[in-house]
Amino acid sequence: MEKICIPKSEFQERIEHIRKQMHKDGLDGIFVYGDEYRKENLRYASNYWPIFERGAMLMGKTGQPIVLCAPEGEQVAREMSVWEDVRLVPDFLCVTVPDEIDYPFASYTSFHKLAKELRGAGELNRLGIVGMGDMSAELLDNLKKSFACELMDCSQMFYEMRKKKSANEIACLKEAARIAEIGFRAMMEADLIGRTERYAAGIAEGAARQAGAEDITFTVFGSGERSAKIVGRPENKVIEDGDMIMCALAVQYEGYVSTCEVPYAVGNYSEETKRVIDVLIHAGAAGLPYLRAGEPMENFVRAVRDYFRKEGLSEYDVYPPLHGIGCAEAESPYPDENTEELFEVGMTCNTDISLFGLKGGSNRVEESFVITEEGAESMFPFMRAYFERWLTENN
Image (cartoon, rainbow, N blue to C red; front, side):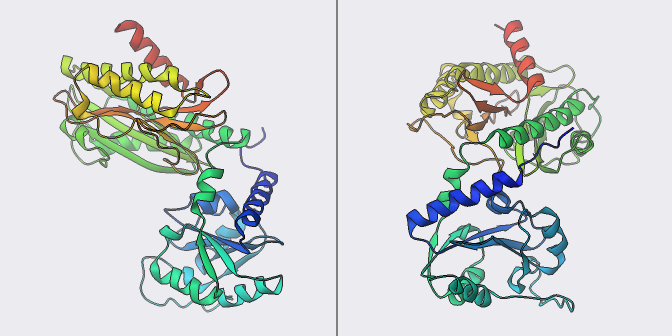
């Protein structure tokens, strides 16, 4: 079976697109920053994802891109990067250690030498920086001194490029969703009463890893009263009969992240808890018809929030109910009730429909969708069936 991934040909298409935008913006080169946490732009441009250290991709108006890393990550960079030219820079050493670490066998280049190399192929008056706000002030200052040219923040270029997904990107997101659903179902179908939140999260994470997860981007978890922690981590709190389970499992596959969150409770739960779940699922159903190509994004947001308003629950609705997904768990677009931008075919998103602070417990719905000509295609078949069954039984 052919592996689901982004082929090198697609990375090459991205580079060509970047260079067209560079020409339009009058840029002579571009520097794409990334690290273990803010990985999305560097992964998008090169497929490299640093561990502990920082990384970057540098390219001029011609020639192959250069991937920059630090000594410990060199072999990882060579394994992951679609570009063969991998070089070491001392500026990218371990981000958590202030000491100067000695790597006796490392063969370094420098930003100054790289700038000279770019100038050897043409002028270097303006360098675009993607991820300028993600890097340290010290690193940015070193770039300014070494490249000795105007630096332009070009992060918006990548945000726009990443909004619409290719068939390969959608396939990666669907695979991430498939894996996330396996993990979530394993937890959902387990007997959790008397177990800790960390035990429950471990079931989900373990099953997802076994199913092929590249990474568990996060597991947000809270049970009972702890479900009101909007982005709480699993703790040693013991899950009791009737507890609401608020769990968001974000799974990464080939650099793409889908998040699965089904609101549910364990054992003999109260009518108040059932109402929270019911309102969340019905609010999602109210918004779904507006999740389609050509529809203003504000209409989806307004439909969900109008349902909460009708139920008298607006004070528990703490943030907008939708965001884009891709190389980051949450990325553009992130619409509100005033977003006139239209959904387009090929956009991907997660519902993020939430209520926090109610007596019956707190929870949210996170379901991944791809926008198609026909409407919105869910990436979670089990979740979609669960919601449809609930709506049938609780109308």
